[in-house]
Structures are given as structure tokens and as C-alpha cells.
Figure (cartoon, rainbow, N blue to C red):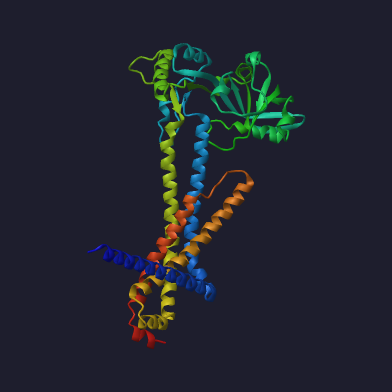
Length: 435
């Protein structure tokens, strides 16, 4: 075969592809117009048919959006806590209802004196701090009070380990850590008592009956993975806090350590295990009487929880999508019945079966996409309303939008195939004579 013949064949192939593309575009445009006509002429019937698709897509994308937003917020909280930070505590994290609590209830609480031993005997720890939390405290200022406040005494390196942003004032400095009556207020505290960070600075408040001077205020963090709700916390130096609350009876003490930049968390955990066992004088056959809790250890649990929530949302939405699919199939059967004469005429003048099949199938897909689009619109409106409250940031991602449209397309293909196939199989003569 010479070059000219090959060139001619190539031109024919390009022309055929071009014609096929134009024909497909015409079919798409025709299907879109017919779907729009169906929406205009039979508003109630179409609305009822699309309702199932709308509800199904709404359920799926709402669950996905909520869980994705929650997961993102939790991940940010975990990053704020630090992936290179270890909490030395009495109780392990993430035990759940099946946790053998009797193994841990008699463990000793971490003690302040253990902090010095950790710094002296470890080589992997950059910073360490001791703290204890004591909840349900009362805060008073000039006749106004606030209940349920978290009381958090900390040592001086605490701010170097936890990513707490001070937006006004400062952290405890110098001899203040030796027992000064000073405090740093969380976001909900200064907002509820004073209205602004600037107004809170320098004020003398009473926490658990003891006067303290406000020297700093924290930026609001919102809900997250923090072990302590810093927004609802009054932070004081540990030396002062222990004179207000007996940590051994009414507090939840813990030691928090941060690894050096060139040290892995596993390496630090291994060293801390040996050091803590030595401090507690445990025999080789005895179990650890402390817990080394790390942020990354709960990642797998979170993923399994979110997977179950997403699965539940999909199961719920499937019922709505099945109902919606039957609705779309019903409306397409009715449409085929109403257009039987037109189908016969098209086939009589040479329309192929696949053209008729594609035309009705695309119309079913278009109808499902309309229903899915309405569901996505509802989700978007809800995200705007939730974000306007400022309680919990929610985002409808591009990925979830594509999931909604993809599911709508699949439902349209499944629901519309049988009606479209039956239309393509009609005998042109019988179809033209039908009334």
C-alpha cells in the first residue's frame, strides 16, 4: 500500500470519528432538551421521581462531608498536639468499654519528682513538663461567676511542647514559676468574662477562691483532639496550683515530653520505658505501671471509626437511591410509551438501535444528575449555615461533589437501561401504528 492510499484511509478514519463525535453531541443535546421538556411538562411526576435520588445523594454526601470535616479537624488537633510528643499517664488512651480497667486502676499517678529523673536520665527528650488538670472549678470577677472551669497548673516548659498561641500578654516567666498568683485564660474564659483579650489582661480574678492576676490570654482553638479543652481552661504555674488543689486527690497529673529533632518517637518511647521502669523500681517480670500515650497511636482507631460511619451513611442512602432508581425507571417507561410513535418514525428513517438506546439512556442520566445536583445544593446550603455559626468548620470538597455526580450517573445508567433497551427493540411499523 502506497503512502497516498494510507493518507486517504487516515482521512476517512478522521472523518468517521468526526461524524461520530458530532452525532454523539447531537444525541446528548437532544437528550438534554428532552429531559428539560420532561421537567417542564410533568413537574409533579418528575419531582416525585427525582426525590429519591435527591435524598440519596444528600444522605451520602452529608455523611461524607461531616466525617471528612470532622476527620480534618481532628487531624489538625493531632498535629497541634505534636506527632513527636508523648504523654506519661496512669491510664492508656482509647481503651473503650472493653478496656480491662482493673489492670490500671491501682497504678500510681505520675509525680512531679519523676520529671527531674526523666530529664537527668534520658538522651532523646528535648523538653519535658509536669501538669495536672482539675475540672469543675468556679471563677469569679466583680460579682460575675463562671462554673465548670478547667484548672491547669503547668511547669515552665509546657508552652514549648504544646502549640498554644498567646494572643495577648505572655507566658509565665522567671520566678513566677516558683509560685506566683498569675494566670493565663483560655478563649471561652476571656470571651465570657471580659469580651476581648485586651480587657482581660491585668485583671485580678478568683479561681477556686484564690486571687490570680491575668498575665496572658490564649487564642481560641475550638473542638479538637486535645486532651484538655484549652478554651475552657485557666492555666497557672504548677507551684501555685498545687497549693490550690491536691493533685493526688482531685487532679489528673501527667508528664509530657517532646523528642529531639533527630530522634524518632519509637526511640524515645523505648528509652522512656526503661527510665520509667527504673524510676518505679519494677522487676523484669512485672508489667509497666504507667502508660506512654502518643497521638499517632489513635490514628488507626480513628480511620476505622470513620469507615464505619461512612458505611452506615452509604447503607442508609442506598435505600433512598433504590427508591429513586425505581422512580427514574418508571418515568422512563412512561416516556418510552409516550414517544412510541416518534421512536417508530426515527427507526423508519434509519435510526439505529444503539442511537435510540443511547438517547433514552442519556436522558435517564440527565434526570439523575438533576436530582443529584439538587442533593449537592442542599448539602452546600447546610455547610454555609453551619459555617456561619462558627461552631464547627465544614467544607463540601470537590471529591465529594464528584462522588455525588458519579453515583447519580451510575443510578441513571442502571435505572434507564431497561426502558432504553425496550425502546431500541421496538418494531418501527408497530411503533408508528401505536396510539
